[in-house]
Length: 463
Image (cartoon, rainbow, N blue to C red; front, side, top):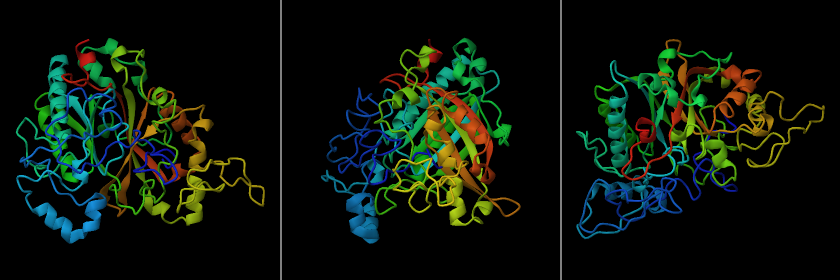
């Protein structure tokens, strides 16, 4: 987990990892736009950015024109000034507003679906649906149309078209993303078995699995992320309501990450074990990123062009056992310094790990079973995946043990060349396996993005 999970932001001496060039979203100091612009379809963003930079609308006060307290301006004001600014209604002629996390907008339309290379958000919901008894291709098509319309509106900071709950009335887009995928069982339910990708074949069994089938797989999968908890919940409720009689929730999981701007300087995020988590995640700036993460235009089946495959796992961390280890023992399990994320072989977080370096006694400085050693692409035939997780904490169980860990989500062009070889190697001797437990699993085909007027999955359902 620690070696490749996507960071919130990159360390000062490295480019952002797991986010589009120049970041997944940008902060706007002007009023947010009324709607997503037509033709904004490149990487879910206008050219060279994933956030709309539209001019303010004079004399209009809406849920997307808010006074925030995040960002450099808001932080300088302090708590009292920020609270007063948020409470005060802007005057009719005010056109320039303070910058805010709420104003950040990710484009719905684009080459790829949002929520894959988007910078990691503070809140997330993962939810799987099964089609209702008797529902088939026709009902699934209508559902994906509804979901796509709702996702586009909510990501633009607008109300849902279907009985909006007003939960997010006062907020802006807040970097909201909604991502849709299809499970293995979806294709039989809709009569589309011939269109089911080979890459969607069930994952092999792993000896470390303790999977709950009721919380695994599903016909349809939705990933929701936002930097505001209410905005994320609002989207979750809208998606659930849109399902209507066509589909029912199979399972749902809620997660979180560190909020953007919570640290004094940009740095890689930490997981619930306290480890810096995301140092070696593939970056979109790398020449082979698209080849590893996205299905090519000439891929098979054709409806998956520019799409990706998501492996979703609920990984419980046995924190009571982990926290009994000394810091030195924890570092040996991971292969990196807990304080800085630097490899045990020396240097900084981004220094290349020296796998052959030995100590005074001739032992390997980075243990042979260290998690960061085992998960390296060069130790797995080049296998790589874009890991984009959320942490979770679902309370304390009957034994007084925290039910907490990682909602692991990884993206790759082919899971048999991404997740599977790495997990097989971890299964054979990862030092971290003693302190984690895989409790649920799912694999979903996530088609490419949509153009204006299209809905997600249209090439599959109408092809």
